[in-house]
Length: 98
Image 1: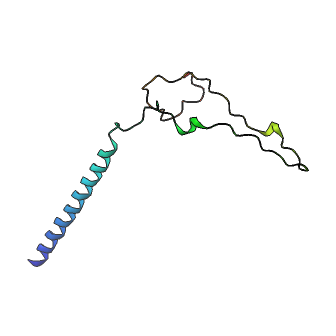
Image 2: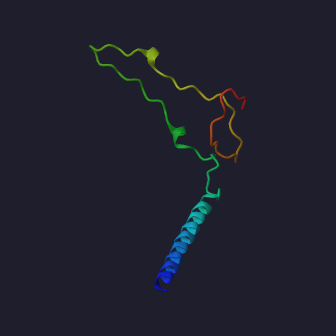
Image 3: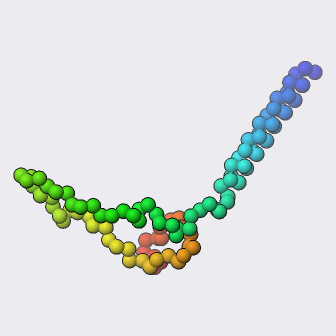
């Protein structure tokens, strides 16, 4: 009868480990389900406070930089988002009208 008890003990330990793992996974997933702490995007974002820097000054005797190779950042053409709207999770599809 000793081998049967050892098997039962192993089965109990295995069930306990599986149950504990399942509870841990459910608790972990449950923590991700709440959406209360998300920002509304009404607060200023860090990238919005960036200002354009001045151009690089080339010392005398060196070839000046080609100004056609600069990449200007265009102004936004889209209308502002309504107040209280959530942040955009993914960019709109290419070619969409919104």
